[in-house]
Length: 204
Ligand SMILES: C[S@@+](CC[C@H](N)C(=O)[O-])C[C@H]1O[C@@H](n2cnc3c(N)ncnc32)[C@H](O)[C@@H]1O
Image (cartoon, rainbow, N blue to C red; front, side, top):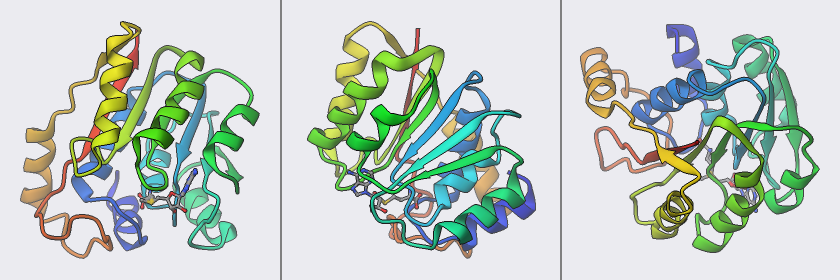
């Protein structure tokens, strides 16, 4: 994220640390072209991180039954970051995901109560539709929401996915050196200096 985009990310309310935002941006940049999806957009904070690295011409679909800001305001922010196409789905993910046409290149899951049941239902829909090299990223991975890691492990056990190594040490060093987390408007693990609860799998 460039300084202007990082500033927008930080001022957007939501539940994501700068370290996680930078990791999400890197994951987006490493995904192939195709359809990009976020489940659980809230106010568009994580969406800014994804939008910052979208490939030209890719669509980003945002899903949330209850966006926490007007979608027009979120859209305005995203259009200041990227010329991509942004599509809002005001619905639960299990209803919205099957309606999205095309092959999935990138899916970020950060929805609802982060329960095993919801995460698993989302994975069951998206996993078979991932293109080769496509990425499924999970927020709240290896956190108190243990169902997320269970889903991650179950997908890994199918043999169709491999783990993506996120360079947390480099990312943390960048955040600390620039004091980037200062002023980040998040309700997520504020007791930690740099929460890093993000995991990702790549379709083989
Ligand atoms: C933890 S917040 C997401 C935070 C956001 N990604 C960010 O970075 O700030 C979870 C969001 O999931 C939404 N949500 C609840 N149930 C959902 C469902 N079944 N499908 C998709 N989103 C859901 C909530 O409305 C809420 O805005």
